[in-house]
Length: 127
Image (cartoon, rainbow, N blue to C red):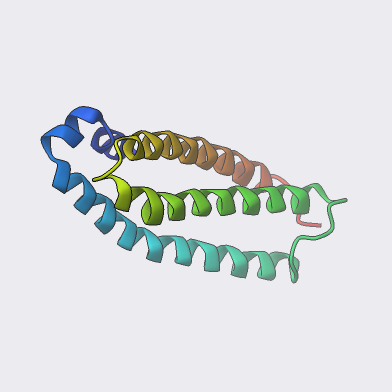
């Protein structure tokens, strides 16, 4: 993450404007595959552990798992918005980089929250 935050700095953008866009596009291409793999393995893991989707919220495990899924979905939505809306508009709109910076920080916070949920899930019984 420190590299991403460095690339998002105004100084780096002014010094290497074309490189920033190229880095974001290439990072995004790799990110698509990684996110798809994480999503599929998470779905498979859920089905192997529970045998179904986590829809019975009387169990803490299923409620927390659903919360983690929603957090991951929010992170994916932010990433898609960044990649397909903000990155292409970086050359024409100065605010695009500022928005990317804010949303990236939001993604970092959401990822910490997802990790905390994952750690909590690891201490609970699935049923």
